[in-house]
Image (cartoon, helix red, strand yellow):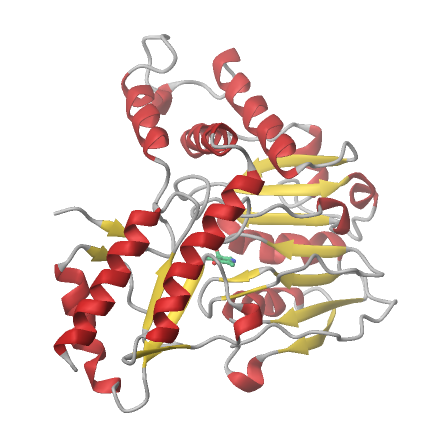
Length: 356
Ligand SMILES: Cc1ncc(COP(=O)(O)O)c(C=O)c1O
């Protein structure tokens, strides 16, 4: 049976990335060696790393005064790398759910945290807007796409202080204005690669803003100065990331990717609104294109386990919602084909017929 992979992460990657990764595991680039077994210091791997950086720069339109590096440890490592480097006195955080809460907890180890806005009052079902950003903050921290709650910022904020964003789950899903951010980072295991690598895009002036002596691996300068090669970078995830970036370029870049994502999300949100058995959980203006959350309609809550079983039997994978929201979450990352969204919609319609 065809599987439709709606997993929140690690998640679906483009077929061509799987195919080229499989080939490279057996013979990387005609070297007679596996990508799993080559030195990161080889010219062949350096070419992969440089290509991934160049493609990311091209696709996101990253200005010249920004550096890109790749590092292990997952996005959660950046939760403390960022305040360790940049929180001298006080930082501002917008609290939009679990991933910002975790970042706030780490930041408090280094200095004062001001939560400048929060959507906790309604279980994080919206993105706070029109909040004041004090000018005395070392930086303002946001998470642009909240993987668990299915909310997403639709604009690049204007901030009077350096803006730092966790883009783990919406990077490269749409064009962004990188120049509005001082630092963008994320784990790669949603839209880019298998788990094991994070990307960091950092504006040059931030390198002089490190506020304290730090262990070498924590200091952002280490990774920029050594072009991601201070220690052994996650070779295989970086290889796959490069393949994914090539695929995004081949389909026409981020404008095209964004259009495809809008189309997929519309198909599913429209059905959630139409279908008498389901309802959305997020305010309309803030609905994520990547993580689409929905629950059973009022009075139909008891049907949730039955729908999960019904959909699973029809090949839907990973649609159970996070326990903090309940219901369902269909993650529709870049590589998820429109056919998978249509298959889920067909499933929801069939289920509605059964319960008329
Ligand atoms: C938005 C966001 N930030 C951070 C993380 C944590 O990433 P990692 O598991 O790579 O530490 C996740 C994981 O799902 C996430 O969705």
